[in-house]
Length: 444
Image 1 (cartoon, rainbow, N blue to C red):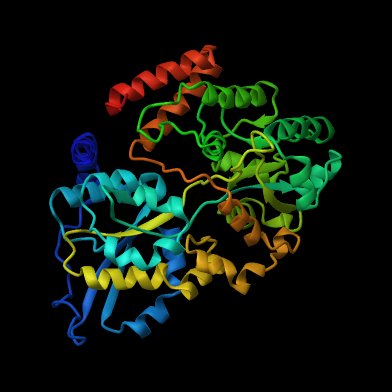
Image 2: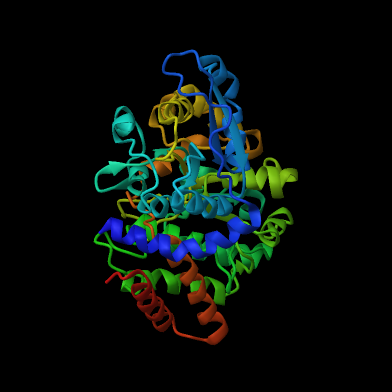
């Protein structure tokens, strides 16, 4: 079944990827500079790694130690946007190219890449790490009980909030007190009304017609719902998903939401201008808020857990994003490629350094007991925010993105547009989306 779906995926995406390849030029040369493996410990081997800039910045922090440990392994990084990386790799895998040796993969697209049967089976190699990685991270890396990628960072969802705006609205600002005051999404709605009334600010930012769906998906994830159920059936038209959809429509209709796509410049500029009071998002938003859009607001932001649907729900956390590393099954240097991945992602020191200096919160659980977790961040009022991230991960439902997530995410964006532009009912818009998703993915 998986192979059949993999062929279908490849067929659907290959045409588009060929066009991109023609424009950008695919790297089809063999591994230059490599003269065999280093199994004898003498010959130099050159690995080619495909990766995007932000992820490479984390890897760079550990390269001096890697070169010292493996002087015969040279690493050439080829950086590109993650979307371009996936398209180029579809071309590369279709022609059995040996390049790249290693590639970084976001969790949102990992399952899609696994299903086209182009990654090396690393089940035995990752076995020592199985119990030390956050469990849900293995789901998208696995097909037919074989594992094809090593988890890197996670995206535990938390709630970042503005202390000054919360105080002006009469809300608490201490993280524990905020978590106690805003336990549920209804509490969040009530707080949003106070923020709007007392400060004029919006509770969060999202586009009515071009939503990224991150808040919507986080609310589904924490309750164990998704576009598909555990048996692969389309469930986006279920009563529970409609319930979440209607909640977010209410937030928009009452003008409690700043109308801009999350993580876009208009959204970020609104944060910098103090127009948005909270961000319910992955841990990596700390760097976006501090470094990119609001560096002048040191001490104004804090972090706590995200609200739940019901206060007694078992799971409260969710995931947004995260990444992984995999080996091209046609690589001529799989052993060296694994040494590179293991050094970067399986080593506690490497992961700790990337967590502290690159904002990549690790999936490797052994880091969570390190004293580095106690670090207090000046920008966030001296709060040890890493502990909040770990707390979110501990209560995250073990869900997978699945291979059809990119398509489902796109169709969900269209649902909001139909509701807000065409006055469609949420039930009709979700039913139309579900039927289209069933037809395109051949799911039930």
